[in-house]
Length: 315
Image (tube, rainbow, N blue to C red; front, side, top):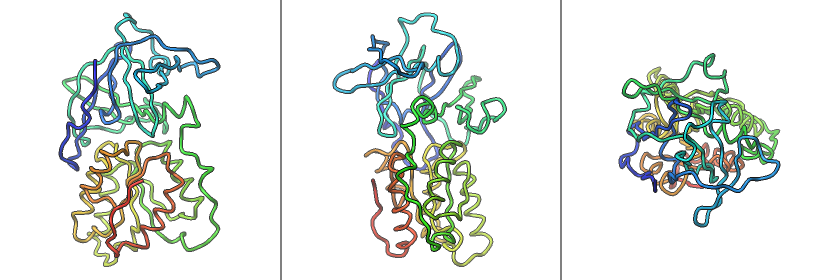
């Protein structure tokens, strides 16, 4: 197999992504290439006692230890017809190394987030379903999975640790309007709890970048003279149907009326490469989702420094 090139998209803010299509029990699924470090033929793994039923064990290619997740088992689908040809999709996100066991991989294709639709909640498991987007490519329907939810379901301790967020009793944060763009229902809930616990209760939680852009540009078009009185900070994920966080950030930061809105990119994909991409589109701060304890402090800084023009922050 080999290493996957995760730097294919040279320009940031185009609202495009690269999707790897993979197969489980004859069904097509997708994963953002930015999450992938390598594709490998299935290998023998070491079983782990008392682990989740969908955890096959661990293996160590080179010097990294990876947990192996059986995606067919998690999704309730049948076994591979030819297990010897199965594939491990090696990933790194949320500062975790995880290998997902699939039955085959097809190809990588480029697609606009605008062409990815939010799935029907009735069909795909309610508000916290495992499918975050539906893409149609060459007459095939590809379901893009929420790998953050999958890892959280299997191992809840890998999610956002709300115990690190301190309870806040002051009143000065209550009136500060914060807009959040996040497509995962699980993470929307966690972000809401974290921000409200810290005193930021004036929240507008939206499903994707397109909804956030429509809201913010709508405020601008209403003639409001002090845009920061309506949006004191924007917190955005990167991966979202319709419009991603980089595109949203670029639109805000290139608009002369909106450019002073502090933008915090809060994503599982934050690494050195993604920090560069976020900086290119003007993000004021960027941090990975396990760093939830730092988010409130960053928002505090952002809402008080919007006119200081200090350098962007990365964590």
